[in-house]
Length: 286
Image (cartoon, rainbow, N blue to C red):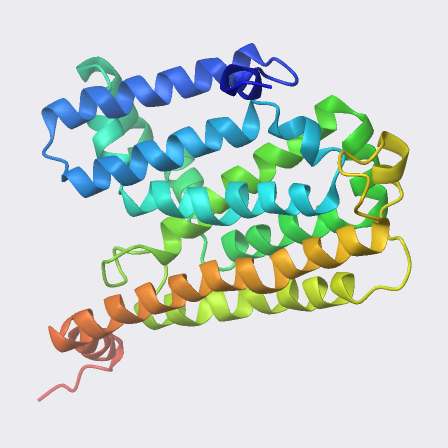
């Protein structure tokens, strides 16, 4: 099998190609209008290309036939690649890539009740971390895992759900501003990855040491690597969740901690707390 054979989609998706083309054009146009550092451009394109390779190539064939490859794929789709893309801070760049009339329409939408409601939902400090963990764990349950492997539509829903929740989550954690305007407070951004990684680590440990085949669907589909039996496959897949995913979220903790320390050193966190106390304190009349 040559390199081009690896790039052939296992299941062709015109809608996925359209989404990737639109996003690539917007970032490219926006980077011509706004100054984007070289390292940010590299992060975006590496993460962007990595997402495509994991969503629309022969990787899907192996992911449907080996549990540990499936977990590596989701490590990239849910943790690492959305993290890389969001570290490039692409939002304002892609917005700048829109035609002027579309930017005005988007600005007007953001001022409406619907637009404000969507922004609140997509950046909610509790709802977004919950989704981030939920879409990891729910697809690990044997029944959802079974049906997602035999139904291509459910398989795509599974993959897109982890990608989108990953983008939403890292958008919160990597925010470098105090709150407000950030949706989550700086020190909460430090604690959040610790809370979200805990259930994933527990699930990874359970799968690693399971003594029964939790996912017989991979045997039914025919394992791509016959030398890996069910328990060995599960053990390696559990380690990916337990160790590798934990390392990615540990980076999130360190990055958020550096942001919180920087804001604290500049007095932006302390002044925010004092201002809230001042505004909330009763006025004493003379």
